[in-house]
Image 1 (cartoon, rainbow, N blue to C red):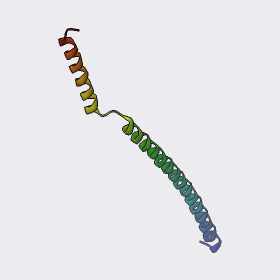
Image 2 (image 1 turned 180 degrees about the vertical axis):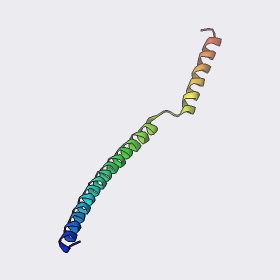
Image 3 (image 1 turned 30 degrees about the vertical axis):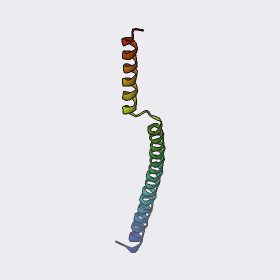
Image 4 (image 1 turned 30 degrees about the horizontal axis):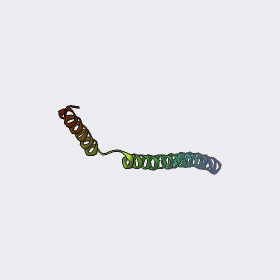
Length: 81
């Protein structure tokens, strides 16, 4: 194989390698962007869940209020009103 053909083959390999690396770099950049978007969405969701947890009524409190209301109705009924 003459030196000229080897040089052409090497240049073609170099070009193919550069194109492949550029494609891989683009795909990695896209993955990083998607990862950042997912991290942001998870952070927003965590904030929303935390806010919902802060404002919800705890189940024992609801049970206690329901029991007290039932007791009040029973006492009211027992007094004949």
